[in-house]
Length: 112
Length: 116
Image 1 (cartoon, chains in turn brown, green):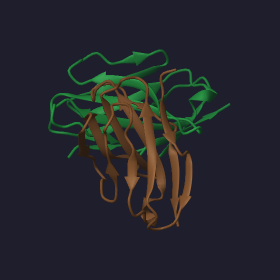
Image 2: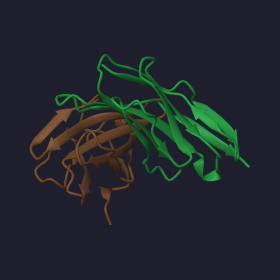
Image 3: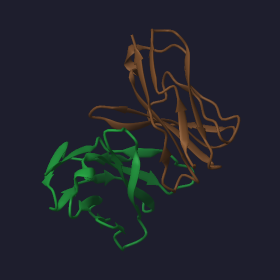
Image 4: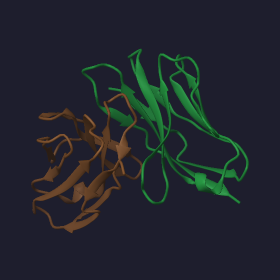
């Protein structure tokens, strides 16, 4: 089944404790992206990647890191999480940037 | 930078009736893509419809259609014969077609309620 998977689905952590949210797709897509969703703000793009080893900042990259060492994986790293990073996070992939994006199920992150 | 505005935070419609969700965007580009996504309570993001700016014909997918007005920078979604399963958050999104501009912009969303 073609899909985008994210883990974990739910995470509660404390300020400053490094964490990684994994994202994997099995559709051989070139394009992958991370978003955060906050009430009243919609989805805002954090980082995206057009291909392996190619990443670029989106609208709200501060406090986040990504890497694209393999085509199928695009982990999101929070090296020192803060409470303002409490949000719902989505990973997405697409054949390329012009096509519709397939979204993962979301990761609910709470930073206390 | 491009911005996407959905001016209706909430809308409601009677089952079997028609509803239109509004979306406007701001851009200086001539070529781009526009999308409507649906997010039901499960939180899954589902593509509803896609429109390419260079195409004058409005996109249609079954009961869903758009009214794309390029000059007015407007991209509204019409849902005909509304069903209970259409209840969800709906997001309008914009993506540039320029090779060096790959970010995607979403509106704040419109929550649609369908009344039986």
